[in-house]
Image 1: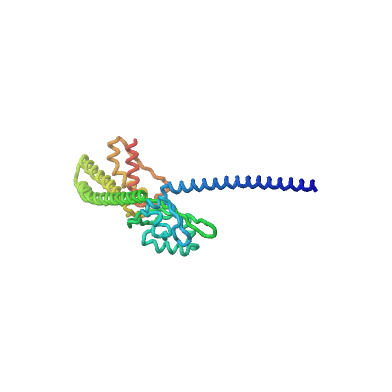
Image 2: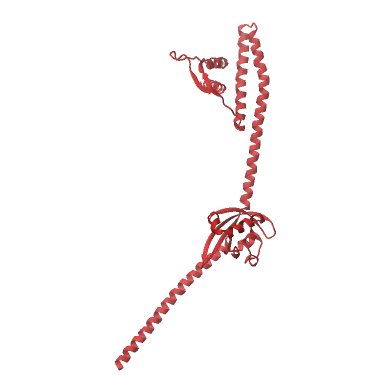
Length: 310
């Protein structure tokens, strides 16, 4: 009996020591994990409280349950004034009804709102409005759903955007005014230039000696070249204003080139250059699909630029 008593007593003591050890071990790890969670929560709270972005938590009924100090600074409310209030109090009056409807039908509208950044107009306590960016994320706490909203004041960005839009409009108006000015000036220059070309053609019909005829021909060719340059300016203004039109047709090259060459002979002569043309004998005529006037301008520019390069 004594041995049995001692054996039972030893077993009880060992069991008690083991239980005490396991309890101390579990308590130690429980306290350690609890302290880690507390530190993590403290760090999270410190970040939320010190960040410039506003954090607001609402329940499934749209009531505010938590705000950080940045919300108070942004909207001018004290924390106690916001807790329990509908979150729509922070939104522009014209958008509150739509926001309340989103909350009532959260399951339908959640994919369009959650995890998406939206630009809204917010209202401060004093009634003043300012632009914000809102990003909403869901959170489950027990069996209830909550929403965390991150609010950022974008007043400076909005102001920069408005200034950029105004600058773009001013640039567009200035560009339009420039195009209109070029179009008007081109038309005004063509009137006296046509008179010069017309009178030079009349002079060529009179009896002139070789030097006079050459001088008048130079006036005519120079006038035609200047007219082509004015037409290019007019075409540029039409392109910028979106009123450029192109008429594509079958254009025979030989008559077009024969018409161009007299205009540039005088300019090439001053550069001690000459130009000749040749065509394939086996082909009676050559045609291209192009705008007749534009093709003439392109060939003139190419020949003149080649002459300048030489």
